[in-house]
Image (cartoon, rainbow, N blue to C red; front, side, top):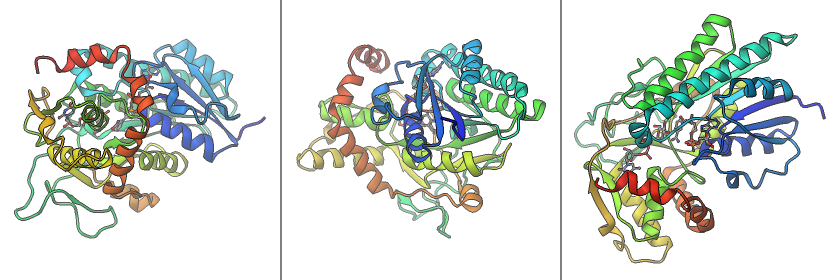
Length: 380
Ligand code: NAD
Ligand code: DAU
């Protein structure tokens, strides 16, 4: 079959990548979706069981740092679009092992860019109709202060279209123009990869796009990240390790809303531009943790307050960014995107999914997981 587009999605077996692959494979039967994933501890083909036999889906197990292999795959599948999600993504791991983050996030991105450059420049149309779309994070912007005006209650949520701005935790937001100021090895590696992507546009004329998104939550997230980790620990009656005082603030977006934004931007975004993607949904960690506890207890039929005593304050994350808050109004204004789910609905769906998919969780947390957990949390 002659496909209308051949899109390489890197990191498609990971959390966000699997939602992007699922959306594209189902929505665009006339596109061929080539999922490139090394299947690190974070990549799991069980995340894609429902699409693995679709005729327009191909999986290739490969390392994005392997330049020759990337060039080969691009040629073999006539790749004309790349949506690049493959990365090392967990801040705590980056603090313990920064080299792996530089290798994958910086050198891996560079290897993909150079392979795309060589391949696309060799095709008859050159860069015409091609796009290298890089998925990045709000963490590259650094951290914001907590400057909430008196009298505003937290949590406070609103939609991007609301005339009233979100002032629960502060008046400042990350804009597309905000200067990069990364603090962790993870965010420094993502910032570096963003710069390389933009450099390939400015130097070689490659059509590129970068988006910077806030914290995602939803099904299929590896249980090293706050929400699935805490749901799983509550189920096993294990302590809930709250870093520092639990006062840090994150802006949470349902993962399917991120995937929808990626679809929209891939098709309609302005080349060489940047879009911020966020939920307008800031939560102080400890407030979010209480919502998770309440929801898990209710869905498991336990009385309210049953799991409160699992909360355990532990040593803070080194260099822990205080607050992230994305202003995604440019994306709303120019392309009409908005988060579709209210947080209450999203968190209910998410907790329910993890409780209903215990087999998935048990599979993910077998093997190396216990060792990771002990290394990361013992002595904290
Ligand atoms: P994840 O850790 O769940 O998945 C990463 C995937 O990349 C895994 O499938 C892994 O096997 C694969 N991978 C890692 N190294 C590879 C390599 N060298 N070659 C090929 N594949 C490799 O990550 P995620 O949370 O889904 O994040 C995806 C992307 O989105 C990342 O670039 C991340 O920086 C960005 N992002 C994440 C969030 C979030 O809240 N999770 C928010 C904003 C941006
Ligand atoms: O903002 C986008 C980023 O969000 C992405 O780029 C990253 O890939 C993604 O991992 C996420 O980073 P965070 O560090 O914000 O997510 P994490 O789930 O690790 O932590 C969320 C908050 O909860 C953070 O303030 C640290 C805190 N925390 C986390 C863990 C794992 C705890 O208090 N205890 C924990 O055990």
